[in-house]
Image (cartoon, rainbow, N blue to C red; front, side, top):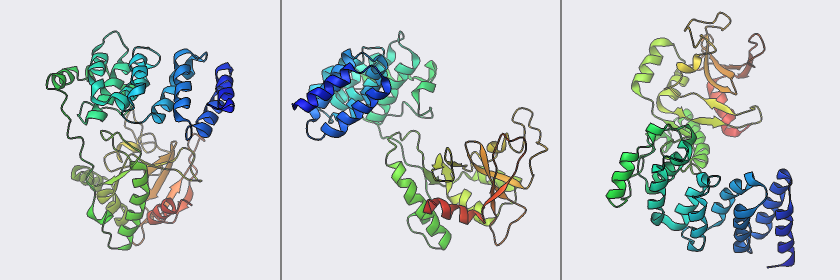
Amino acid sequence: MSNTLVNLIDTLFAETDGNKFATLKDKLIRSYAGKDRQAVIEALVRYAREGRLMHWRAFLMTDIIQLVAPAENSWRSFFEWAITEPALVYRATDGLLKTAGRKAYPALVALAANESLSTEKRAKAVKSLAMYSRQPFDRELPSDPGYWKPEQLRLDELIAWQHQGYPDGAGYAPPQVHPSLLHPGNDFEKLMAKLDKQLEKKRRKNKDHANPSDWLVMADEKDISYIRDRWALPEVYATFLQYYSPLKVTFAGPDFVEGLFLYGAHELAERQGGYAYNTVTGENLADWPSHLLVIGDDGADPYCLDLSAVKDGDAPVYTAEHGQGKWTFELYAESFTALITKLVSGK
């Protein structure tokens, strides 16, 4: 181990300022993880055990897990210890699975069943087991285990799975998509295929198949029927909702603060709440133009189709800032197609 590396580690351990610690930690990983990975892991593991900044002990678990290799058994004992530490257990479950594989199952099942632990820690163990084993213990539950309730832990299923010898599950089938995303024909289908290519890059990073995001999916016919009965949509947007309905899709860009979240067919009606109608009483809000349909938002700033200005099967898109006392709409895109083109180009 070089003197420079030793000095950097010593400086890391001596630091008392959290922000400066973060900078030093990033420098350590950036400069030495490639050529002396084991030394970097050893330093971070030692800090997780005895470092002076308590909150950083827990935060370092994410870095340690990223640095260790799958089935790297030499670090298994650290994670076995970490799951017994209240401040570390939440993140440590993934590290134990990464290093011990299936051999981690008994300890994590016991952790999930431990009623003396908080629900979120037990839920994290269940979530980690579900993702690693491909068993559907996390079906129809929030992606973040912190939102799970005790009765949602599915301990009976977990124990039954243990008695069966921990068989691997089948995982989750991907959402149903329209064939034109793979084999586009007309110009609009080609535009949708380009949009989906962008989303595919984000999908690769999402390992939580129980909660898929960044998909353009086939809408439920019941949702489409309800929408058709309620609004006279321009053909382009109706096609988009039916065949390319956004499923947890948010676009970043220079025009957006938090990102443009596009609504899917399953949520379009509900998302009008707070804009077109009062979510408590259900009454229409007088200050909302009835011809504007909210199709997405950027941190509650609505993006709307103008249903009174349909031309050639498409309609312009307007936006406004919320919380200003009154709505002042500005044209954002000449048409819905133009909006998608902007999102594809990133401009």
